[in-house]
Amino acid sequence: MTLKVNCPTCEKQVKWLPENSFRPFCSERCKLIDLGDWAEENHKISQPVNDKVELTEEMLDQLESEFLQHNKFFVEPE
Image (cartoon, rainbow, N blue to C red; front, side, top):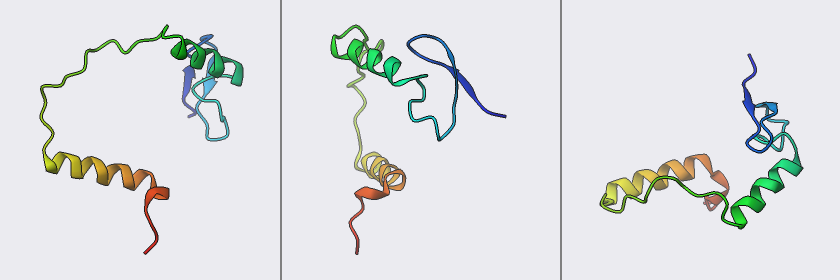
């Protein structure tokens, strides 16, 4: 079953497929409209930044490991 999501800009149903290069948007136009809204600061992150959580060395190592696992182009050849 193919997952369908609503385009964040126009609410049109979009199939979530690898060949859809604009996902979650339905088109490049909707993607650019959304980018413009962010650039004009019309969108905001609704939750305040929680700066009271102290990051430990172990937490940073885990985050780095997960990042590198999903972004192999950052790994230098041996």
